[in-house]
Image (cartoon, rainbow, N blue to C red; front, side, top):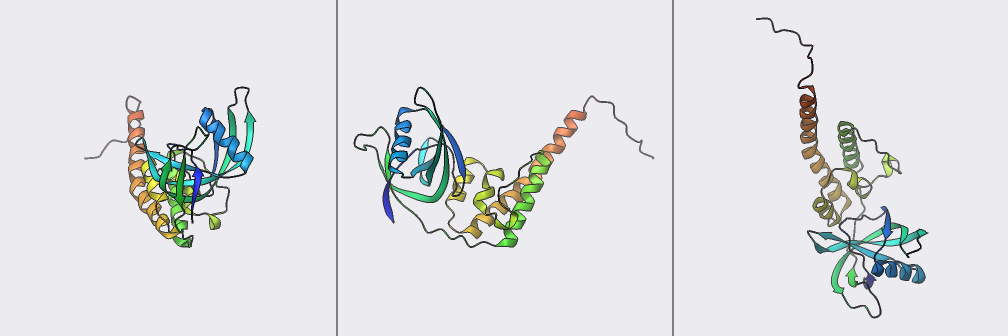
Length: 211
């Protein structure tokens, strides 16, 4: 399916199902949000990578405008719906300050490998333990999918965008597993190094080595 959507480019990657809170302050995006509320239509958040709008983004729905300030700025809650690919950016939308885009929606397989997903969640738990991060997910482990945990796997913005471009759940799970297996020993070594640095200059209680 191909259609026109209003777009709000941001230097973030949003995933389907993700709940995202935003503070809206630019006049063009205040207009966009008001239009979306009035027309009850979603809008697109294409990812901005290296100061360029990527061809991929996520359609989001406006869940709630939680606060409107005296100057028209607002706080909003949104939820990711599905991944889109930009076919053409429309810079001149009649009577509007914001831009739009002609997009389509790539077919996205949600077939999961439960054992693979369990491994991903297990390694994320190990990573968070090393980093002393406490994270609880809103879903039970059996219901978790790659989109639910991707922001908590230590991916860079470019890596998060690469994940957005994978349209099979098992590919996304494997991508996360390989990333985590690569980064986990590096993070563990960094934490060990930090402990060594902290110990430098402190009194040490060490047993002597017997010759």
